[in-house]
Image (cartoon, helix red, strand yellow):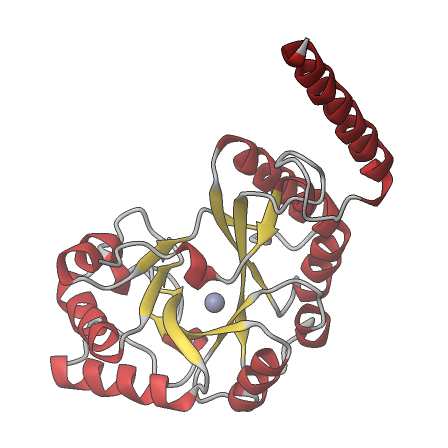
Amino acid sequence: MMIFTHVRKVMVMTLVMVVASLGMGESLPRHVVKANEPFAAPKKQVAVVIDDFGNNMNGTTEMLDLAIPLTIAVMPFMPTSKRDAQLAHEKGHEVLVHMPMEPVKGKKSWLGPGAITTDLSDEEIRSRVEAALDDVPFAIGINNHMGSKATADERVMRIVMKVCKERGMMFLDSRTTPKSVIVKLAKEMGVPYAENELFFDDIYTSEHISKQMSKLLKLIEKQDQCIAIGHVGPPGKITASVLKASISTVQKGASFVPVSKLMRGLQ
Ligand SMILES: [Zn+2]
């Protein structure tokens, strides 16, 4: 009888607790949610890097005003280099030095001031990289502007990477050539690195840029992290508007993060 009474008491208490918790259902605090609920932060990450800031290029304002964390790559020694880096920082974006580097094809005059070319001495390369890093405030690393020739040159890149290492900076390989030695040297020298996987706007039409955005969405389905590069300049306003229109779609599967969140090679 004692045992029966005890069991009945337990049953009644359990029932009371179940009823109480059911009643609380509507007012459960928001942090008591299952991991797969829609407002749980997506695990996948996308870093969007925008190149060619520093010369008051088309789309500068539109890009900086996007309500997602971007990585803003600023060319050194240009009329608005400092202003663009400052604005990017104020708006919560990350800053890289967009280092002009010699391409296989094209004129040296396209590179802009302070460019790294393969005919320079070791000392001159070092002093140009250091001067560029000093010129762009808030930079946490470098990525290459053009550079299909220079980034494939091990002598040149070893000096650039050494300066990165000394300053605790990362290198984002824009991947303008499959022959780039950046990742190989970064691993060897212990420099944090990342690699571009997709250019949004190598052709300046909204059709092409939208198609590249679809490619990015497919990449996110397959992998956990992705880095893509767009530009201010001729395609700037179009790229900014495609990005703006795609924010909510991307965010269904991934979070936008600054590129430093996706760097590799840190011990
Ligand atoms: Zn560039």
